[in-house]
Image 1 (tube, rainbow, N blue to C red):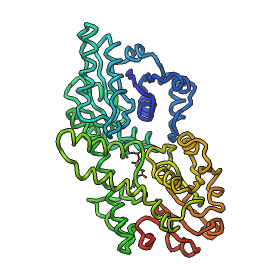
Image 2 (cartoon, helix red, strand yellow; image 1 turned 90 degrees about the horizontal axis):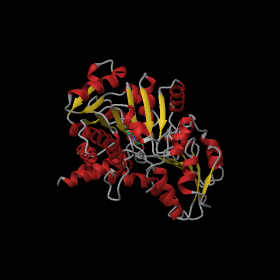
Image 3 (cartoon, rainbow, N blue to C red; image 1 turned 90 degrees about the vertical axis):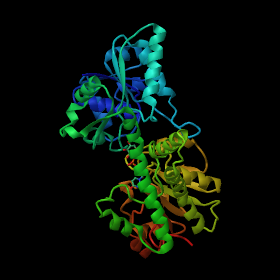
Image 4 (cartoon, rainbow, N blue to C red; image 1 turned 60 degrees about the vertical axis):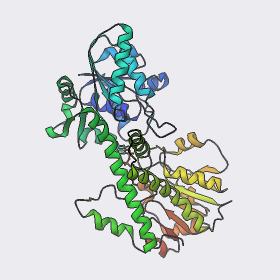
Length: 445
Ligand code: UDX
């Protein structure tokens, strides 16, 4: 079946490539001509395992095409996916200008009936606003064409997006139209071996499902970080506690890893946007506000630990950083804990010497050339002569370390581990001062 996708960012590109890969005929539209030209050459603007190969294969097979021509994009298919960005406004609510601009484009160019699919993460009620925008555009053209708007949120994790798209736990579609259900069933048929995977519900419930899923996962993380902070003060080991509670199937092992806080393009933005939405309907979302506040504090905790380890004397120190991306297998640094740390260190007059397997270019793009930011060629260069090592991301390259070697590299034997990668006993045996997250002696008192 033919499918148009507006937006070739993370979600749009993964959706387009995956749908083309199962045999659909997909046209991806973007207003960024340079990006489209590069995509046509098989050049992928983001790092996502497997995506480049998938795009190249499907472009070669003629099933995946790109355009900057809005009229052609609208004319191409009945199904029109909106997968453009919804960045946060200054007040934390989702900025819908790009979503509504696509709605206008569709309304301006459509010549037959369309099904508009909201894939972007949008606040509850957005489908209604998209509907209004398309209708207004049709009215101004004096046209009376039929169209539907449905919600089809994505649940992709960066670094595992292709697998999440093809083997996701569920496909949620919010609609009350039988025609939309039929078309969406046809679109997703290749992925549905168990029929119950495709869930139809009303539009507002589908929109809220997306936010509720991300807010629940973020809550699990902040909860665990709170327990970790308590464990530090009570002389307990949160890693033992994690196993202890995860073994209860009602709790489960997933998303209870304590760390230096969650980052990325979804959790921080979505938790805040949901809290804003709550405020708009007169409800004070206490839990959501606390989840966000705990996370802010957690992102700051790496710096606090360094500050305590060095008695506040961080000016002139060189701090090695392993990991810049907000999580492994991505080059994404949006809201990454590494950024909170680097910015605090710079403010204190310290120099950062960082290494990340993928995010070095992104770091340079974000912060430019500056004397207090050194980008190391590998993890070894990063630590040579540094005053301390901080681990911000659990890349697998950082998991096995010869601690005697590490001790010899560092000018001061301080290791702050934001991801609990090592056995504290082994690290300490080498004479290193080891500050992990919630592991008994981690707190510098
Ligand atoms: C998330 C959701 O998982 C996905 O379903 C949604 O569509 C988009 O948001 P993503 O942001 O790509 O995906 O990454 P995820 O793997 O969920 O991690 C988010 C953050 O939480 C990372 O910073 C990670 O380090 C942190 N995290 C995750 C923890 O600190 N502890 C955990 O136990 C799990």
